[in-house]
Image 1 (spheres, rainbow, N blue to C red):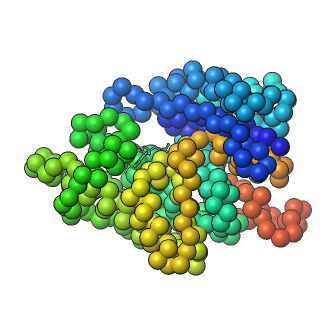
Image 2: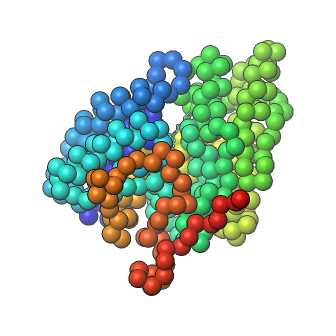
Length: 346
Ligand code: AMP
Ligand code: MG
């Protein structure tokens, strides 16, 4: 079985082809990089509309797969930026109709977990998902993937990008900030904001900009910001691990490319006798292969949507997404209702 997956939730348009053995047959991606400032949803969507047809062509050519060998077309349904999601969904609908193949909706966050899960071989890992727009600790519990903790303000990647732009750099800031941090020598105390299982970054942003205005060298600030922010993420991941008595942690999202973050999480997990796995960078960042793989899992359990019912869901909640491929033991089909999400407070 071969599934084509389309990712377009934010700045990256990507097409992946994946087979039953989770082999990535092709991955063609293009990231929208604005000349200045951050991401404008409509400009990013225009970029995706422009590049997606060529990415589809390239992925098929690279994999030497013909369109009639594709078994299903998967797309990221949410969460993400509305105009960007619609660009990818439109291309997926057209391919599904042209090729007469099922259209499979995929939750972007679940896709980050599933690609890391299959690559790691860990049966039930906790995901630390650290990307531009998202910062979450996700685990499978009581029949659903659930967000156990998350950012209370902005995603860690957006935070790093904004800070770097304020420092005079360009988007995306994370990789440049990482290089700069390697030159840092002095650790400046910054607000450490962990609230239970949640984190917040705006305090670090304000404090770091104030220190910069007072002449603190940029490398020292980059170093201090990384150490503080990644320690916060490591702490909430450790708390999830302890509560769930878990033994495995996987990483996902662009910020999970960061060596310092990888090292800190690895030290924490291994210190507890567990296993940490970080996918290769091309599969950490937003990519079509994770959408294709999760689409393949869903397709194998009979999930598909008609074109008319394939609306995108910019605010799709992870714990409302059914994951029938993870149901263990005898199939609950026809017997039990699908597991209900945990009650909302209030
Ligand atoms: P994503 O939204 O998952 O595609 O990831 C994009 C985000 O990852 C951007 O905010 C980047 O600045 C950030 N990023 C990419 N590489 C690194 C890195 N090496 N260290 C920190 N952040 C990074
Ligand atoms: Mg992502």
